[in-house]
Image 1 (cartoon, one colour):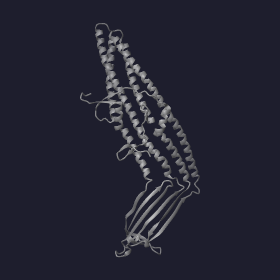
Image 2 (cartoon, helix red, strand yellow):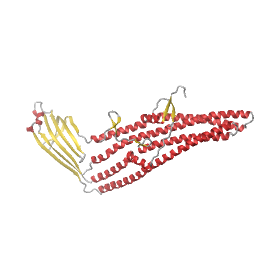
Image 3 (tube, helix red, strand yellow):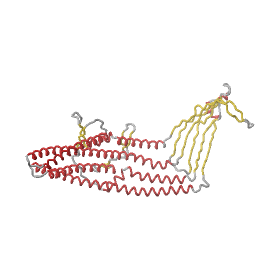
Image 4 (cartoon, helix red, strand yellow):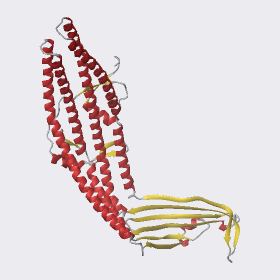
Length: 492
């Protein structure tokens, strides 16, 4: 490490904060949250009226074309003309019945350039000053009925997924934090062992020179020193690798040395499996999958039933003008007459080879299969929560044991090291005490890592903070595109 290299001190809380602000997984979660918001806005926009302007400007035609004559023969005539059409309409869907209602005004113009300019029939106009149209599908599935049930659930699911993904980011950040902390602690141990073995080797050299130690003991201490030096070098590489992985994840682009500060204390609280399961059902996005799967399977049954026959009723009523040479004549009361049109089209299979029956049976069996899968997923869902709670409780109980073992091992090593320096025990006893001490220190750090990763896993599974007794998910928080942030909205 360069002497001028910056040292950045990181706590677990700061690491998680940086991960939620900078990590790619957090950015991905924000993108999916925004995508869910706009998907829901697309659905809601379909329920609002639309003002549409349609037209064809121009439709010019100038070429020789075959014209059928009154006697049935065909002659090629030169045609030079242009037509234009404009339609302005207000359209609204009635979601309760899947009815489309529209109010329109239409204008058409025709120019025949093949006749002289002074001919009044050179330019003609025709239009519908006002008309109302109604389109009603009969016996078909009403998509708005099903969307009204599924779209709010999908939007709610996207909001919950955002919180879950951010908690998963926190879980990953805590895992990487402790992985680096384990390697830093391991490097600290290896450096201490290297220094200690160097001291022991020099002591054995002195003892060997005065005849109070044997050559095999001297060789053993030299071998221990070489091993400790090699382990220290490998530990440095492991620290560099894990440091780069953590810095990359939390978005630290500068080549800084990370100094990690482990949590000063481990919170002690009880978690009931029934309580965790209740919060998971209330808050977790996956629980909404069960509702969506069932609704989608039921929709497939309805669609299969509706495909047996279909019909569309289209009715139009309004006022239309005769062709005129002046555009103002379109809106002249004397030139406008009421007009209407009613059209009923239908499709009714007479013989379909049992296709409809097979489709219906397929949809019904798929609904049964979906229900079976939902029941199994519910069992797996509950087991996952129960296992996570049991795992957390077990890890919490092991921390106290690991802390006590570390305390005993450290004290035991100090005693054995003092006895070795006094010449009362040999190198083998000292090596055993050192190995026991190192394993106890590593086990304690590993227990801390397992605890915090399991803790954030429980937060992810339930969207509940059991330490502070508060919900992590607020249903009133919604994405605001104006500020590109999440704000709390008033409850409707």
